[in-house]
Image (cartoon, rainbow, N blue to C red; front, top):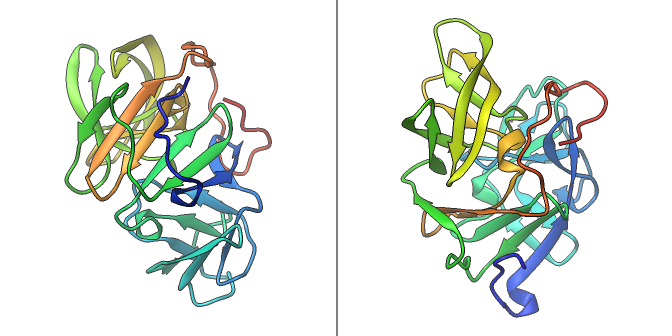
Amino acid sequence: MAPWRSAPPDEEINLSFTLENNLVTFPSTLRIDNHPGRFILGSAARNTAIDDGFAGPGRLLNIQEKDSLRIAAVRVDLRGVADAIVGADAWGRNAISIDYRSGLVTYQKSGIERSQMKTFRFRNEPMIWVSVNGRQIAAIVDTANPDTLILPAAASSRGTVSVTVAGTDFGAIDVQFANVSVPRIGNRLLSRFLVTIDYGRRVVGLWRDPRIPIVIPSGVERPGRAGGAL
């Protein structure tokens, strides 16, 4: 059983999603200013980013006709990746849980149940500790990252490192090196867990989902390509 809190129905809203190019994509459960579109979840984004060509002022996130959440959206060129990347501003001081196996993002007004989870506290973006080749590093939890890990480097490349996350040893896996200031963990690793982010209490929780195998398939799906399986 997943470590869910037994909350009243009006305290939780389930939003279905699919993994497209390894991005958490809401097919029809969300609208922005009542306009439909292709929206992806950006757990590390402070503000919702809306593509320059998308209609609407970007003031309200409409959830399944049950609720509307105020957002402080910014306009950017998303280069065809999505119509919008839903950021932390949508959830306010509440929590979300991402169940990759069931394809559900649960918006939780009452917070998260942490008793069965490995938890990590953060200050700004959601972050966890990850072991890379035996060294503990802090990595941003970024659901807009379709890869395993992005590690700082002077030049872009790929390589193999040994990775352990929340006590789960993934062995030697393929990662990306890029010109970033802080490591970022993406969906190819996060999808092995039930991931919870409590933005109000500033806590990330990971629960190793036994329904999903530990082995990370080779190959990386890129935005714009067909497919997007785990």
